[in-house]
Amino acid sequence: METGPRSEILQGTLDLLVLHALSREKLHGYAISERIAEQSEEVLHPEEGSLYPCLYRMERRGWITSELGLSENNRRARYYSLTRRGREELRRQQKSWDLFTDAVDKVLSGTEK
Amino acid sequence: MLRRHVSEWIDSRRRVREEFDFHFEQLADQYLRAGFPVSEARKAARRRMGSMFRHKRQALYELQARWRDLFSAEMLDGVGPWSRVSLIIAGGFLLGLIFSTRVTILTAGVFWLPVLAAGLAWLAVSAAERMVGRHLRFLPAMGSILSSSQDLRREKKFIGLKQDGLQSSATSAVSAYSSLEWSRVAVSVDSSTELLWSMAWGGLRQF
View 1 (cartoon, rainbow over the protein chains, first blue to last red):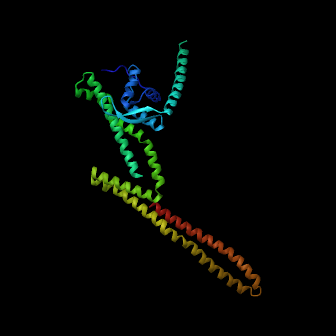
View 2 (cartoon, rainbow over the protein chains, first blue to last red):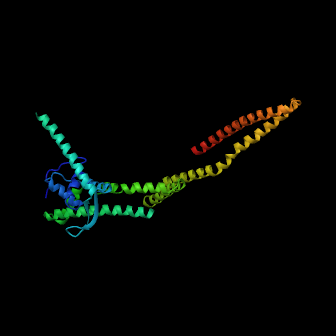
View 3 (tube, rainbow over the protein chains, first blue to last red):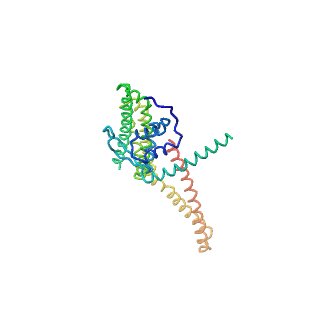
């Protein structure tokens, strides 16, 4: 089960990816990582060394909350879910990301002319 | 307070360990489902995760950020300057004990015990400065009072011998002059003694 070509996650975008992954349902750390990899068609794989500090940081800021539960294979796992503040933050980050990508697109399309 | 902080610290370590163990097991299961033998699946999972130690350390650092802030704030607010000194010495002593059991007693003898001794000496000097210094600082004031009263007596005698006829006006002049002289002497005695004392304490502190 070799994974596809990997890409470094742009600094500062991991928060957005994790918030988006949690926007539909509560997930544990491993599932968040898998969700991001799956939705990016195996291009983005958050490293464990970045993912968990990111989760703890977001929990400290009140964007997400965690609780213990049982995984699909009956193992004890910590599930993360988005808070109201987290949803607001997701909307804010999505907006600034759209602005950023639009700006980059404009620059790149400008050089092609 | 300390108990709460210790349990929070232990809980954070346990949480990181459990989450990483779970992540590792899930990854190994994924390789197993893909047809890897058990040992190979675990090896592959370990390889994919990279340095668990480093990842755990990074995660723990982030998880304990709030705890660190709270702990340091509460500790510094809760204890006075004397208790802080005691804590520093106790910490040094504890480190000495840890190192002596883990590495060698020689390390404790060569490094930690001198550190501890220096800490104790500093504490003793500070205590002496606070307790004894307060009493010794009376001396300059006493000296200035004594010398100025002697001067006053001398001035009165001298002027009294020279100006017998002008006793009443001379007395007021003497008292005015004496009070001026008293303050001058007091200032000079006081400042010179203060200077000496400050030099002495400065030297003692340097030592």
